[in-house]
Length: 248
Image (cartoon, rainbow, N blue to C red; front, top):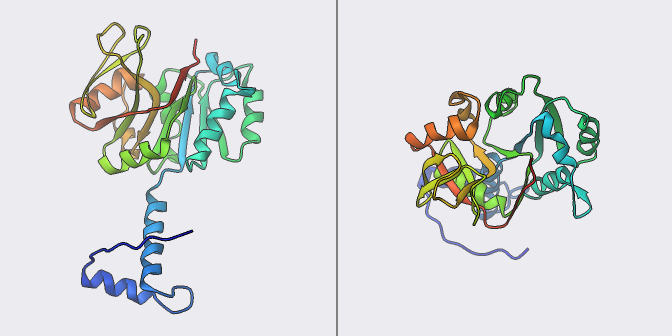
């Protein structure tokens, strides 16, 4: 791969630490050392974990065929394309569970099914994976099909350093969805159905682990997100691409 030359400024102590890595064997130059450190830093920050949430009563949605493949297969492949390695499917007991397990088993990702016995809402469901989610992570509602550049959304989330980033999309017919009021990329308010806004929640989010200290109530969109709006701990990101709501 062709490499580009760039000019950077660093302080003397940092330069000395970089130079100390140059041993003439595994690290042959200052440029190689800097490139190595940058790649390691990006790797540490980049998001590798994702959660798919869907109620047991709606779990058959994951098996709906789209372009000759189940919805769940599309979701897992899309996450994999953007660097995700670990996925937690949180759902209740259902007749579809065995087929869902089979799809998870053949995925190239590490997929774990977490059974939500109470099914009391998205907030308690997400809390079931709290121990596994120690770094920034993605949450996707299981009845949605998203196809956009998730990597850009991840970088947006890391840059703005908020507790939550919510994927948004504009629709000409928002009457069956909760809507969002924006000022730039600042989410001012989440509204119930029936507002004048045409901007809706696209069913995909990125969270810091500190979101678990904010989880209260039953639902992310009704209970958690409005609180984060008031403290300016949430950002909106337009997901320019394909979006389909496959739910009931």
